Length: 111
Length: 110
Image (cartoon, rainbow over all chains, first blue to last red; front, side):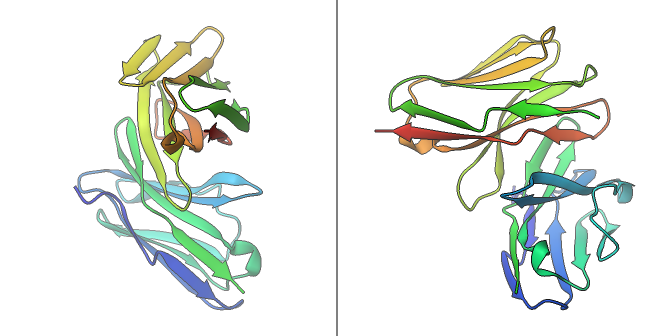
C-alpha cells in the first residue's frame, strides 16, 4: 500500500506565479480532502470530494484557489496567482468509510 | 458549527504516562480519532473509537470516551522520547465531515 502520494514535496515560487499541487489518493478510497496547515491557523479543511464530486468547498480561501478531481486516482489544487500569505503546508487525505489517511504534504513557500 | 478543543501543550518525563484530553461539541459524532504528527511529516492515524464504545486499548495507547460529557482522552503508557509530537483529536459525523482540534504538543523530557 503506497499511501496517499503528493507532489511536489516542496515548492518555492514567486508571488504572482501559478502553483499546482497534486495528489493521488489510496486506491479504492472514495473521498479526498485538501487541508492547509499554518502555525497561526492550524489545520484547515479547504475542500473535499466524494466520488470525484466536490461536496464542500466552503474552506477555500478565495477565487485564487481551485481544486479538481478529474478521476478517482488524481486531484489537483491550484493557486493562481499565488501570494506570500499562501505559504503553508498543504495536505491531501483520502478516506473510505471511517478512516482518513494523510499524505506527507507539500510545503509551499511564496516569496 | 462543530468544535473540537484541546490543550495546546503537555510535558511529561520519560517513562511516565501521558494523558491528552479533548472535548467536542457535535452530538452526532460517529467516530473519534487520534492522529500523531511528527516534525515535517503528515498526520498519522494512531487509533480511533466508535462512539458507542467507551474504551479502546492498543499496546501502550488507551482511548477513553465519555460520550455524555463529550470528552475523549488518549493515554500513552511508559512515554518515550519518540512519542514527542503533536497529537490531534478529531471527530466525524455521519457524513464525511472530519473536524480536527488544534493539536496538543507533547514534549517528553529525559
